Length: 278
Image 1 (tube, rainbow, N blue to C red):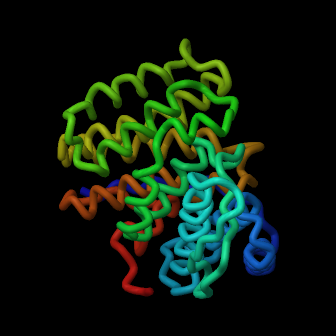
Image 2: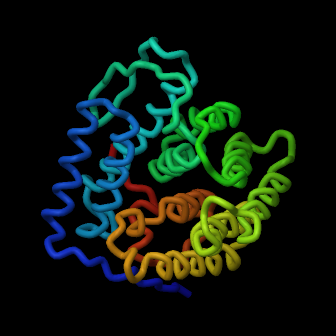
């Protein structure tokens, strides 16, 4: 039976103009090739498309996610090498020369996780593998101020993508879950831990177990928690429109043969099923 989770009200007076503004900002950041800024703006442009195209039926919406995934992968492709070399990456249908940077503050574990999830949403195995090959040690070199669970969660996802050769996936997931308990976190607050951080881990647990009923129940609960967090004063925040982690895990569930029986504007339907563009 299909469960519907409505999205919180988005207070946007002129949605088409707003979405166009986001797209223009993203295009400008790409041309300047400031990868940190470009990643933020391309991600916002992709999520913002949900205001005018909640099911992601338009090719433009699909391509906006592809572009964000391209920038995210490029950011981390540039991070392992010493500064001064040049790599070539395709971003927004154009091959671009990008200077390597070495470890940077913006190449942190939280940004890595978003980039990895975008690769999953876009069904881009090459980019997902590139990101899964990034060592946790490199993410730590960003010296980002964050809670420790972020590294356990990133390592869990890397291990999952590589097929868990050492059979450590369960231990790593347990460490991530325990690390995001309200009593354990210090940088984020308890509400974020409960409503935004823990639910994707719980959903991932049911994905790994191939638990059809548990997966859909956890997905519905996670979306309800997301809506609760982004209602009220936070409703205007773009990242609240489409929860990238939950969307990506729904995509993984679909690809793994689970029936995704939750519908919501939080989960663009064409992205969950995989859009046949590009």
